[in-house]
Length: 423
Image (cartoon, rainbow, N blue to C red; front, top):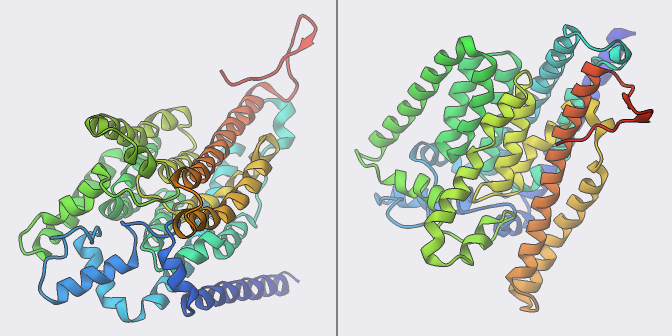
């Protein structure tokens, strides 16, 4: 019976992979992909496949792809994509499938580690029966969310380079699941080489594995340095790519609309305030890693989820692809759902706002019946609701930790039940 059940489960999972591949093929090899490539919600100046093709063409003609303001991918990425440019659609489908498989394996392992960790911790006797139980379908839920998430499918069809970044995030989570600081450091160096900000996920890993922190730091520095030295050699002894890649990310000169807030924020800014507010905005991204790591020192997966959400919320050139991996990690927090207060509101708002993006864009750009304020209002509402989701999960974690320590029953003061609040 166990053998038959396992075979049936494997067959069902294979079928789901097949459906996931079919959906990606149906969108990638049809005219729909060209429309998706133009959507500002899906592709950004730092992840656009058309810009990659432009860089490859300039390279083939012997021109410096970083001489203009088109290419913002590092040299080694351009070299890699040039090798697969003739079958790029299939490459990104393969990347997506590998990401889904790695996420399933990683989430299953992380969930088991969380259950084992909680089993070894002392808790209040009244909470013993509510301890986390091993759920063998946690990774399976993550797989389904990733494979059938419209954001993931659209991202793959548009051939956004964010797909590759998501694969690196999946490998990073696998490193977290097996407690490999070296693997996490190497993969984070690769991700930071492309988009710079993922370096902040190392903070919770190093704080949790203090005895391996020095090894991790050295591994990251060496890996990151090797990537840049190789890039320097590939560019013929030229560092011009640094300004085009990292300067472009840090100075935010492109105000093309996206689902974040930076494009509108800086386009409306008086020029003499730009440097000050740009510095504050970029520092805001980095400020969360240390406080969250100190608040939840024994929960690196939760801190990594939070930092990936923060990255999606606040990074300058954000797209729907930045939410794909954090959404796929949601099954890890099923034990917190009973404490959530806004999950269903956020879920409905996410669907509605996603449908409104192209509508408001059409009214603004094509019909000229609206202006940028209408589109920005939708993107701002989306950012707001996703921040509600993040804060709700963190608050639920704190409430559950309090219950673990102090018991389910609330204490009484002057005969009245107390209410646990977040100060």
